[in-house]
Length: 155
Image (cartoon, rainbow, N blue to C red):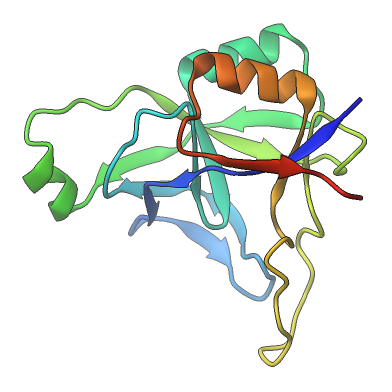
């Protein structure tokens, strides 16, 4: 099976009520609050250090029995910028995509995740990147990920 790095659109970031342990890199999140600044209509969104997906994406992923991902509740908020630009826009329901797999083996994995680092250690651009199988990619493309960057995983 083929695997791919995927860098989804970053449509916002952590919200004010997030709970995370910053002694790890990336931080270990125990309660996710995602604050939208924009929304490109993609089914998969990145907000360091987490990913969220629309409810239909979760349903398709679960229906296909893809490995090494589970879904949790996420609190969704919107920034003042979002409220100014998209006055009456309603966001779809999102869920937190909690990835636990090994890249290149499971349907969802994180490349070199949760390493404790010193502040002086450089971070490779491909570390802490979501890696998905071609089965997962087909599902996400079908639901819409036009703003994601995708490239071959090179183990």
